[in-house]
Length: 468
Image (cartoon, rainbow, N blue to C red; front, top):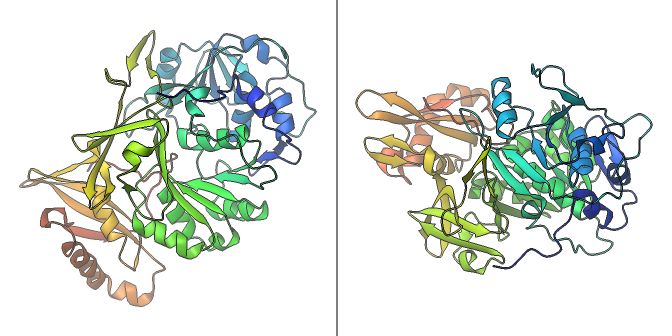
């Protein structure tokens, strides 16, 4: 297998080597910082070198604070543990124990731990302090990402800067104007990919504020001239429901994290006719595998054996991936658990099926609904419902049944509702069900359709899926 080229020693060194950073910045709803300051200044009042060789939990209230800390401590700390903002309080002790944390970098006072913490000082809006220990040799730092499971403690996934940056091309054309943005949080894999993409190529980055409404965020994206923006299909469905979507004019839109069905791809093409639209496949464990740029859902069969630096295969209808972008292992205290099988492949848990000369994702292996012994993938049913012209988005879930064990039901968000739509709700429900009957096997057709004002989207940007 080919080795990654020009693997960065540390994030700061890579950012310094990215070229002229004049005019480049990172911004959220509250602050804006130049990339020059990000690479040269301390997030910790010049105390960062005190953490040399330590396992450090990064637990900040905002993304720019996390960005400063990552830039300062990569190559200094032995381990950086990225704590997402939605980590439940009760899981913090297990994360600290599993990652063998030596220090916590935080500006929070509400995490309820007696563990000694290095207090974080955000340099924005005050005199910037140079970093200490500049010129000291960089060490290999492990980056620990937390998975976003639906229940139970998160898994701790071990990466390196090299595995995280393996899909990023650092030879961007000189003079090309690129400003990145993302709906994701950079403390999760999807957002971290965009953060690193911007940093390693010396590009500006616009981040969403922690409690910033979608409309306000889209307004800032437009004002700051963002050219490239990423998010999940659910992020984009929510964005298109906002009148503020007309305020942005991206050149490139990237979807990942969920199945990109043809409906959302068509909607984006229609709303942003001048944008290049791609959907990528990646996971925290497997890393970035490939991107699809032809405007169609699924991916051509040629992707399996013609993707550089990535090997893929299908076993039991599930996609397996082997590459230098794979995570190393799971952490569990002093022990490590394998992510890869004996051949070095990672089971993504994403199920696909072949139709003509194209593969299509149908859902997660662990998300199947069992209806009388028949398996139903919620995402497949949602893809059909979302094609209905009156539907904005949908969530298919299970409902317990004493005879069948489980039934399929659908929560549906309609496009701008009208009085006539409210009067004809039952008629529209039957129309959507008939829409499903024309495409799906009978056991996959929902037993009921419920109209709801909105659907919950997790901090990861994915629809919140719960078992009934």
